[in-house]
Length: 476
Ligand SMILES: [Zn+2]
Image (cartoon, rainbow, N blue to C red; front, side):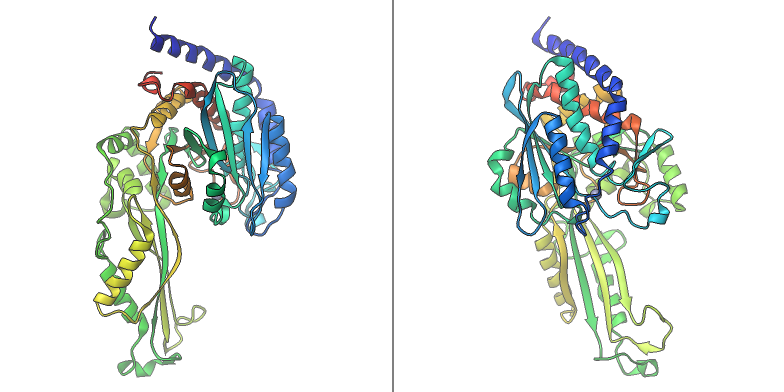
């Protein structure tokens, strides 16, 4: 038997034991998740943030991780943790990025059970944070125990970097990561934010889109005027609309240079997407949304390609006049548009904002004020990376089916900070599903998905020692 075959057999045997252990521990694992989610930790208004910290520390200790609290001026402390034990490969280190803050519960009357008193109904756990992000956090700790119990120890070193302010955009993340770069050194990183798609495939995400949010303000007279005078006074709303029409036409963004740095999906990335297209699920989705078709009549694999691979320019808001009485007969004195660009590698939001400003000036709209309201950069780990192959193999072992590999999430997040500062492959996995209602009322995960999520992370740990072996991941 050659090394490769022996490794595969060892992995299969270990995985079988790990999976059995996790199934046997189902009661305890779910119970602990309910406990963890019964404490609010809302970064937006601070509710429960201070009292949640010792709860988190207690869980880290319980799962045999030494940890340190990282105080950060201007926000709640971040937490770093690391496993104490490692039986074989001290030199291989796997980092996890997670967060312990949650968003506010929103309107309580829309919850079918209290957001911070997690309840089990029909095989699902309902509660704020079960999917985002306390479920993923605890699943990874519990995977440590499963691997230890089933195989006698951890094969590699595991680190946890736990954010306190992800739900408010992680404004201090870069600073904290930079200051603790040595602590965070690793061979690869598992981010949060994967889920199961409509067809039940586990989705592994390799990146996020970047974003640029701006407001465009067009001013007329210094006060609203009688609309009878519309023949002699300009209306800034019309001028703004004309300017907006120069920015996008059909499906194309017309800002000069907008597409210059767009990295097209590679053949491998496009193929990875195409393997998991389910036209039936797409039809169902459209029906659920009350839409006759996707934008531009997109179909099949092109829907996913557009979703993850194309940059967009979206209008999120248009305002002018009196929102409470839009029929009031006036010429509004100000009109404002809120635009949001989602960007793909290697677009740079700062450059796009400058290009937009120049675009407007070149077309005679230099009176329109552009304010940048927020920006983030895109990130994308290469699909051919050996770590992606390893995570895929682990998914096959844990879920018994091929995972869907998405080169990017359609949304944005701070993953680019990790990519820029740490410069290691980053892959996102999770325990939720398409209708987990993250951020909404009745946030939930399916218990079966949760257990599979624990198994997936455990399988990653088991394969990690072979990260740099050629094809180790591919053949497992
Ligand atoms: Zn979130």
